[in-house]
Image 1 (spheres, rainbow, N blue to C red):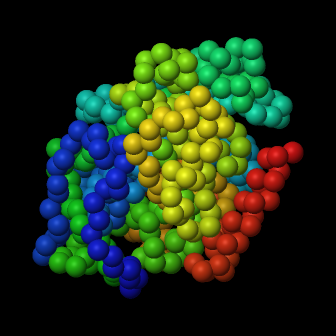
Image 2: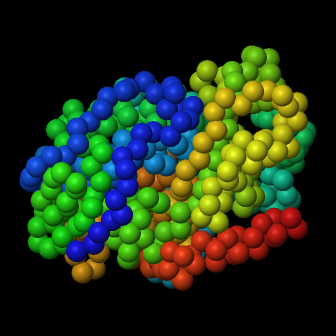
Length: 434
């Protein structure tokens, strides 16, 4: 039996997304006994999309969320829908071969299409906009873009990509901080909380039983898995754990492979149209290539959403605005004095090798998991959900590829894990300065 720490029920964090969500549906708390084919723990993109995929195949699914649907990273992230599913996938050839690596890369492209299809099929209003640009601050970044262009061509990528010279960067972003870029019209941005809430509606329409404020307190493993909450219990043939950075100690084996890292976002007041057009003329989402990266975009109502500052210390800054505003002003000094109307943060799950961890527990093969998306969660969660559902239904080549890659447990236990990783990331940030 594994137990999880009990916390009070929590509403969505105060954020631009929560303030502009278009669905205020509240789902009931689990009460009493419930039998299901599949129990899913976690009401983010992983859990919701696994539920949709299984319900479409005729499975009876119950989903438990400790707080509110989309409460964690799924409803707080930067909203950037970017191709790719792992970092430097070539490193995994020793376990899955060169063809396996190619298949991972192709799944990284397909993952974005899965989000597109989900939005179109269920008519989800989440401000989807196409257009993205990687930003270079070093010559090595430009060289990397050239290699990426060749790689995407070899994969048969069907969307327009283009290298942008320093002289032309003003057409992408109104800052002199960058020496070039690479645009991708197959990536883009959206309102992540509205996507999650729309997917919850879709899951419910297919017969999924959704429960909020229903934290999994302990799991009894076996041929029939039992998940107990404060006021109820679900018994199921299969269990899917999709808690990512918010797993806590519900399953220490999985928790030890994920480092929760803080990421933070500021949202300005609505900007005047000419200023918006000067800052981001093509309304693309953008992201630089540094370890302590900046990512930003415009919201549908014309605010600048500026995020970054991945924090491995395990402690959130006392004042997110004071922490993030100097970073924003280094990019856009002209907006000094502009009101910051929202500030928020949350935890993303990072694994040691930056590949999403998708698999099943060796000792309990009816227990599946997906976690550690390392900043690519918006699309990678949708692919993980597809693969887990396929594996439960019988067979999945993609699931087998991911589960063949081993993942290191972070050393030192919870108390030492974050300080050790913070020290390691300091080294990488120093390399960024070279």
